[in-house]
Structures are given as structure tokens and as C-alpha cells.
Length: 356
Length: 202
Image 1 (cartoon, rainbow over the protein chains, first blue to last red):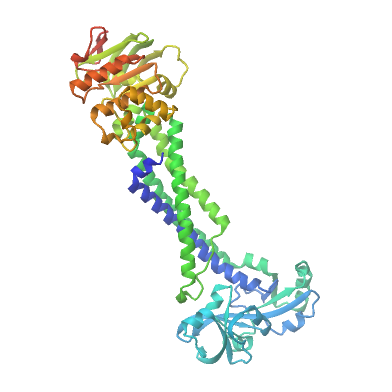
Image 2 (cartoon, rainbow over the protein chains, first blue to last red):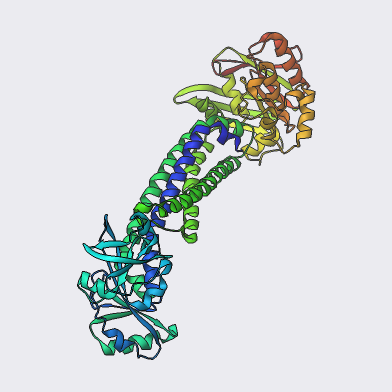
């Protein structure tokens, strides 16, 4: 059965190449866009069961929450810890832009130090291992032209944090002219979240309080990234499979002679169509495995390019992979079935004469 | 028995076959002859179910309910003028493609045609006479009740042509062979002669 694929090897290779490209592109686009969303979500979810943002401000980058609320929130029953974060970006040393994370000291332990100590003074900073490498292990860096002494180097599971710097929240507050971007609360028990949220709302009407998971699900920036990623991936996937369908039609037309002989020898239409389907499905399975391997190593490669400061990171989601596999098989089967079905309806002798 | 009733066929508006009727008795060996362009190949294609006729009926004895595909596979064997083997399949694969018989049984059949040593060669690696024998093996592997051959010796020298005809005559099937080579016709053969799409002798 598969000898036909080898016989038409150049067209088979073209189909394989189109399928690998289409599947790889959907893996890469969705994984990279999902990776950024996932990294930021993880940052928020780390020791953050509940998040407080400025009321009516949808973006954490523009939100400004008064840090003094921390003292009022901490005594609330069920609250384990309250921390404050400022997220920003700016020129650091020779880098035109890098992430700047101002955090309250109780978040320092979330950063695993590979060297040195946590910052103790407002003029001190710890930096991610990636930016440390890019800047050549600096002892001092300039953030918005203000000098900071590097006290330690950290490694974070959240890729893009490795490409940024962590400074005391007081310093970040002075740079970005805000008290905090958001407050994160960890709870003794997640089931207490509703009561805790109600209590916070009685303390201040200037903040939006949500469970972090709910916040992430409804965060507009994430939605935009996910939707645009899905649209671009779908278009590239569709274009790739249009190519497969076209080449498949050409291959089946080339094989009219073969089908004619098979039908003349009494092989049923169903059997001929099924054998074509089997060939296509096999090709797509091979393409899927190749695309998965290529995407996996490409993502690994991109993640370790210093230039991208850890922002290009992502994993191939199993659910997405299964959808892509199913979609690829369905599209290629439809693409192959139509010309095979049309050919199978033609009288054998006509097929042979057309194919000669 | 095979009965052809009032078969006519058109290519567009042109009438290629005109109201042809004949019967082939069970186990008979019949030659269909005539000038080039007289409609022999078209008639053979229709009788062998490879081409759907415009008008008329073909009745295969005892198999009225079979689908055309089943008829073709189980009861009809066809040999083309240019053997029409699939080039990227070996001799064995070309035959295995059309039958459920084991490779051992196929090899046995190939041995009767003296081509068992060619089983793993590709069509391009064997001679024209050998290819035609492979085509015969493919046509008879399912032991068809009806065997049709379209100019099976068209590309062969006289020695090979005679061998092929001897093989065809030895097959126990109702056989209809198209040829324009009168030297291959024996006295005992039934003969149908065509001219301008009509049967003039049969």
C-alpha cells in the first residue's frame, strides 16, 4: 500500500512538508502565546489566591493600589500572607527594555538565589540569571539611569522573570510613581475566599478583589493574546492544509491509471478509497510526530536564547495537540476523499485511458 | 453462458456500437476480430464490465444479482493489450493486490506459466512476453468463469504470441479474445467479426 507513497515520493515529500509546517506553526504560535500568558498567570498565582487591583483599571500595568491596605487586610481571618507587587519595564544597562519587578520583602523567598543575597536597601537589586549573563555578571546596574548594587542572582521557574530585575517595592514605587500594581493574598484555606473578599470590600471601595484564577480567566490582555494567537494559528493551519488538499488532488489524479487497473481487476471502490485514506492518515501521523519533535526542540531553543530574555517560552498543550491531530486527520481525509471518490465513480477503462 | 443483448454505445453523438447481440456458451473460446476502429475493444470493455454501455443488456449466467465489482473480481478476468501492470509493484504484489490467495498459491500459478522466478522483479525488469504472462496470471488467479483479453499478443513476436494463445486456450473459462492476427486463429475457435460497429459474423 505504502509503495505508492514512495513511488510518488516528491509529491509525498511535499505533502509531508506542508503538513509538518502547518502543524508546527500551530504548535509554535499557540505555545508561545500560551507561554507568555502562562508565565504571567503563574507569577500572579504564586502565593496569590486573591488579587487586589485598582477599581475600574483592567490592566495590571496601569493599576495603582495603596500599599497601606496590606496592614488592614492582614488581620482578616483566613489571610495567611499579603504581598505587594509593581510590574513595570524599562531600560536596564545596555538593554533597551527589561522587566522590573518591585516586590515586598515577603515575596523574596519565591526567588531562588543562585548567588549572593536578597536586597536589603533601596539602592540594591537582585537580577535574573539570564539578564545577569547578558550584562556580563554586573556588580552594579542602572535602572532609568539610577544606579543599583547587585546583591544576588536568582533563578525563577517563570521564564521571563529570569530576564528581569527584582527591586524593593519602595524603589519601584519611586520609579513608577505608584504605590503598588496589585496586592496578592495567600489564604489558609481556599474555601474562605468568599468571606475574605467580602471583608476586603468593606475596608476599601477603591479596589477590585477577585480570586486570582477568576482574574486570570477574565484578564483582557490574556484574552487578546490567546484569541490573536488562535486566529493566526488557525489561518496558517488552514493555509497549510489547503496546500495538502491541492497536492493530494494532484496525486490522486496522477494515480487514475493505477485506480483504473485496480478497478478493472475487481478491487472495490470502497477498498480503493480506504487504502488512499490509510495512506493519508499514515502521512499525517508521521507529519504530526515530526512537527511535535520539531516544535519541542524549537521551543527549547528559543527559551534559551539570551536575546529574548526568557519571554519566548511555552509548552505544547496535550489537549491542543489532540485537537490539532484530529483536525489534521479530518482535513486531509476530506481532501483526499473527494478526488478519490470522484475517480472511483469513473469507468475503469476511462480511468486507465485518462491516466496513461 | 454469457448473453449480450442489443448493445449500442455512443461517444458523444457518435455511435460506436450498433445493436450488437451474441451468446458465448459456457467454456467456449471465442475470437473477436475485425478491422482497426471497428469497435472490438469498446465491445470487449462493455462485455467485461469495464465500461458502461449506452444501451442494451449483458446477462451473466447464474450471477444476476452480483454487483459489477464483485463480478469483476470473482468471475471475470481481463487481460489488456499493454499488460497494464503497476510499475512500482513487483510481479508478486501486482497479483497479490487482486486476490486473497496465499503467496504460495500465487507462486504455484506463476510456475504453471513458467514465470515463478520473476516473482520479486518489477515489470520494468522483465520482457514483454513475460509481462503478458504476469497479466494472464493476474487475470486468472481468482479462477474466473469469464476471461476477456484485448489484443493480448499485440506487442509480442509470433513465437510468444502462439505461447500466449496456447495458454489462453488451456484456461477453463468462457473466453473472448480480441485479435486482428488471423495466424493465431484455429479451426475450432468460435469467431465474431466486426465492421463499423456492427457484428457481421457471429
